[in-house]
Image 1 (cartoon, rainbow over the protein chains, first blue to last red):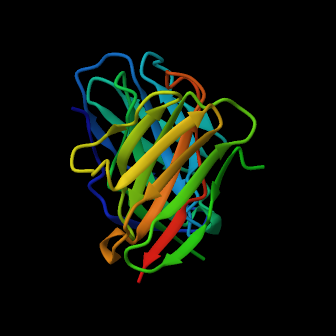
Image 2 (tube, each protein chain N blue to C red):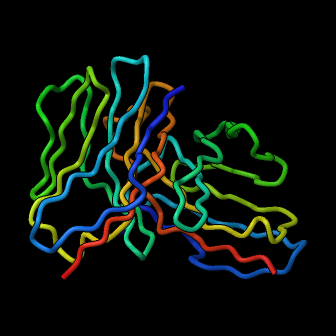
Image 3 (cartoon, chains in turn brown, red):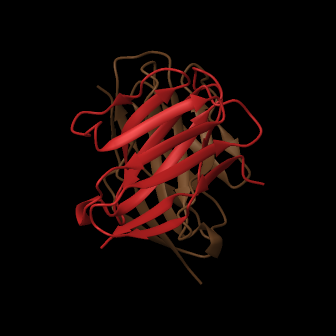
Length: 113
Length: 117
């Protein structure tokens, strides 16, 4: 079974600064997808970024980028130029061959003005 | 705009009654739909996976007779909480995927807050 670990329960960052959220996972599969989802106070789940395991190049979406280390099974999210609207819970997730999406416990990110 | 519509957004019911939650994919055919449960400040717990036209696959520990899932069409899945009790109070979220692989994006509904008195 796959596991996703987010060991930091919460983090805080100053507006305009950069923050990195960590995530590790465990799997025996070779082809899979990794995701970061954002859940703001509205509780709507929003896809932040997606990485396909067979692609070596790290995914980027504007201010969001990942550091995907397949051998180390690490998938961290970097948020540059943090904005107040980035305040939310962030979940790392794994999507494998069994068609289930496994979520980490999440991290609460607070952006300070 | 939203591609997955989930209703109701909030429901309060008396203990012993049944509650139905609807999840609709608005502009695509959802091959697979997932139902999650989330407690405050916790992660999403997968309850069941359903593919159109077939019986839902429930996760271990989830009572299939209590949480009835129907995926009758490619655009609609329903979760019925039967004989609800206060411990069933939670935030329920559906998600839809248009294909069998993760190459297709997963879209989430806006969630339903269920409060059982």
